Image 1 (cartoon, rainbow, N blue to C red):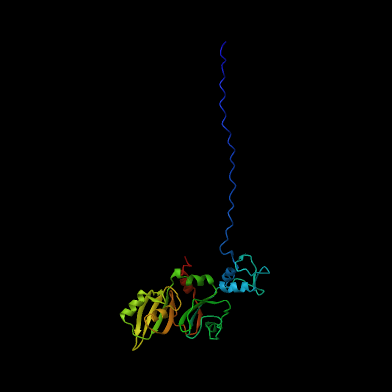
Image 2 (tube, helix red, strand yellow):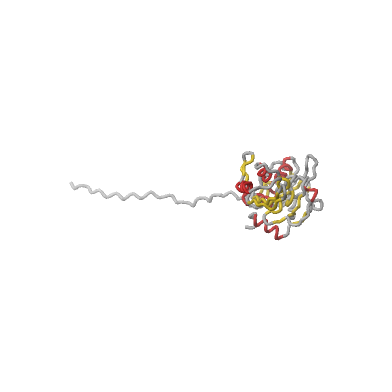
Length: 277
């Protein structure tokens, strides 16, 4: 008997691969558009109505409504382009930005309302609609000189931001005649109540018989900084006058007088604070 031939088995077909389908596109959350979707306090600030802190107080106390509905949540987001915002029933619309400079007299406090009834810097702004104007920085009661006001919070924040290092220049009368060591100590920086304080520049302007005037330039704005620096060296401050912010000079503006910044002055401050980049 002949052996039976076995036919070769057909090669197994490779398993068919599942047809690949394109992955479904990943949905990216819509980004909040800068200048459109903002928090309600930020919206009131951007519109020039008040500061963000003041806006938060108004919202918490039920004074603010959006589209006729009272909002008390300070973290509520709104569309600035379409939202109809009201404060105490009065519509809030974007105001024209105002930029003023004041030669602040000594004896005025830099606040709108003083619990002690002392005169304030707003007593100098009676000829302006100052409802939404805020001081850009501060000068204490005993200090005088250049003080800015604006309802442009972005401008104010940029000018005050320590990162921008916009210089402030002061003329300071002290109760003694400083020697070279004193001036050098101020230039290197001193420690007051555990905090290091320094100036960008310190120069002797002039001397009298018993006192002298210094020119001190700061690029930061710590509370009572110059007075504290001098106190650490047992020096008393007799007068303190801010004469410049960046390239903006106090000039011949009379004490207690107010004027609007020129376009060139405003452009210069914006450039120095990084807004013009």
